Image (cartoon, rainbow, N blue to C red; front, side, top):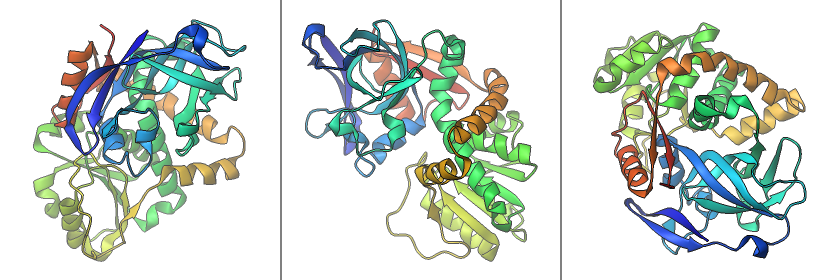
Length: 361
């Protein structure tokens, strides 16, 4: 049996192709290994971020590819086709971090009723969340559109949840309002939804073409286009959460708000316009928000299940909005996946669209 793998050149993401790789026969799988068919996966701008920082954060190691190439990780669903683990049965559905491929072999470890992890040696240098798989067979919240929304937003909303929690824990650093760049992005509007519920003023920064969508979400108190950011009154303490990763925009905002820029957090790279050497800016020093640090902190403070319980409640509050905010679009086959990938890379996917893909025809 072969797997169809979608690979990209690591230092030139425009270059991509499909290859076939040989898989072991079911009988030849090593002890505790699973052969899994990747049935469907979400693809968003966040996956492009995984590729951009793949070297830095070891994402390229997760799913080996030919020299100079990489397989971009995606969140989605897999079906167990063959199992050498005594407690994992053929036909089970797994939710987790998969390659852009039709199949993958997982070395099942730490198997419990709720999940398992991939214990492969080459996967151990990343955060444990990227090696964990939920066992979701029969769970209605992972079926159909509910499952699609989970694949599209659950990992992103965890980041939204952690940023919101960190800002609230620090009393917004004295800010009376929070600005979010790339306001149409899924992580941004998830965060805006949470901030809005706290009652703090939320300003969305976006491009002219996305104003209507961002305004329609109902979780931004004000929507401002990038060419008008200096028209925002600058006399009030302001926190900035940078989802765009645009150095020029960050500098413009810092120089405009000066000492009133009381927090500047770097979270995303949707614009991929970051300069390696930036000048010292007025206001708070820009800092990277590293989600695993917040997870470790809260896991210690909240105890076993504390994060899951709070995040689950937050997710439950978001879910009713999603059918109105996102139109799920499914595409199948290598040509369709390539088109969807390039559209996402070039920023051509409308913000109200969620892509669910499969390399299988």
